[in-house]
Length: 264
Ligand SMILES: [Zn+2]
Image 1 (tube, protein in one colour):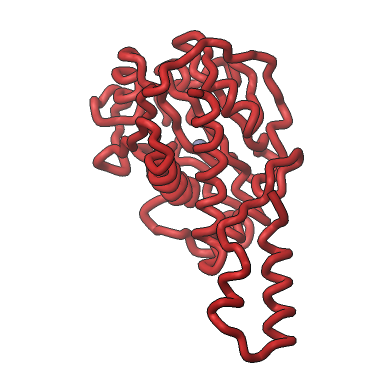
Image 2: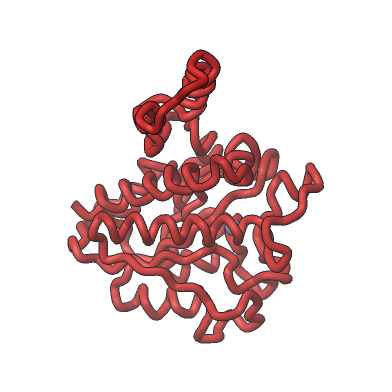
């Protein structure tokens, strides 16, 4: 869910692999470590539309194209959406599980969207560094900062860092249906659009450049990446401890692949 302007603030799916594993366990009660290793654990579903991992792309697509070239050592700053706006109107989506299924939040201090934004932020930075990207995280020191212009907010940091040429990527999950739109990039509106914007839009989908009249983040140089709507089946895969880290890695891999493609 993007924060509004204003003062208020390749492969086969792992399911098939799991099915095969279950069958194998049933057929061969004595399994060795070697047999377990034969089943790849790092494979992620190949991108598609609708996407097997992320679900549908935004139902309101944009028409912009990012053409500007970027340096190979482009500094990329990854932020978690709503990291400084908890307990405020702009706290982010609670997600389908909490809102509709009365599940407890993942962390009582924050909306589930922020919980997952932070997890994806971590995965993207870790995997991005492994790919030798010039990538880092920024996370505000408090979960609630009332003044947007406080120098510690995502917005203030983005404004400052974007002005010196850093690429600011803020991770979000969109609301569940019917109010959610789906995955996609809401690009920055304070600078010309570039190859990284284009690459992320090709991987995730693209929102109109002036989505909702131009949001506060994009005005300050933030590219808002709506990973997906926070609803099943993706939300269940994130909440299930057995599939969580694999799912986060697959999401992180999607983002990092797009970043790598954009700067090369
Ligand atoms: Zn959001």
